[in-house]
Image (tube, rainbow, N blue to C red; front, side):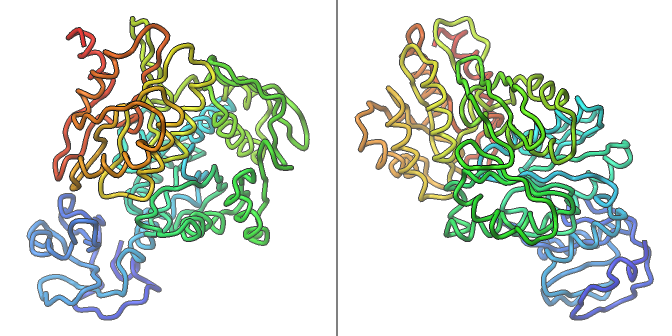
Length: 485
């Protein structure tokens, strides 16, 4: 595509060089540039594309879009006010607006996005629709499954993936939408068919500062949809969102258990084998059985069912889709071990997420609940004492350990969590080394006890300073058993 066509209508501050050049690729990462490439210089958490300009030019870049002053004569330079705002526009244009040809379902909220995405994909496939998924765990397009690096990819990567879906004749795309993706405009040029809201609880306040700011960022999704919005009105922030988006011009469907919602759950039965309830809609009432236990599981099923209802998906596909989704990796994942106690891995890394998993296990536990957990570094510090308090309230014993400390001192993180944990009556021990913490918990475990490893979930690594260390808790647990713990 010609460069002048690519930037048509975009407000630019200055241009040096020719716009009558052919662009064969767009890149924002210096490692992925090639001949006849347009490089968009964006700033990340640790570095900026500005520092790689000489390198990318040597690799064949013919034009650069940047929001800083540079003196370069060898390639075309286009200066704009904000490169992050420009990247989604030119990405969508370069790949011929793929979300106009895809029914894109965006799911946002603090907890439940991943499970709801998998449930929605399962329902759509039971309805006979080819469906792609982009989320926290995997990116799934046809037979291609790759690990995700973040919940919502950068805008350029998203449009590349959407174009792949179109090429694979996929009709529906399911996308987990993070607050960072909305704030940094990664989804700015995505044409959403349906938007869904799961819940909002304390997380990312290091970035958003207040819950009001956090909610307002999430709310942006529901001004970007063209068919329907699905909102949990049992959630107080969800109720506010539903009031704020009444006039956006698309259908609004609410769901809940307590409030008078359009889609409701009635006659709920919770046990260690899952949940059962009656799904009540304006048109029909049907029984739902899910093998994923916990009250939070009812909400995830309701979100997916409400999305399906908005699409007029038949009841049998809704039932089959939910029932056939046995589990989601790293979400209340019970390890298959030949031990008299159980080990459960869960991604819970927020106060609400941790409370959900612990209260769920409390419903069916016969012995003691032993919780191994920590908090991530360089992230929301405010939630650390709260998570310590929640762990202490619902556990019989806690092992406080390291999660992804990143550049923070892991012992400092543990001390902040300990402020909340120490105020409870729960006995605990601090063991910074996560493998040794797991070993200690497994040694303590007796028949009928449950050991919960919270925080890592599907992740198979730890981030220590600038290093990524291999750390798969499933493998660690089995190693410890072979070692005799």
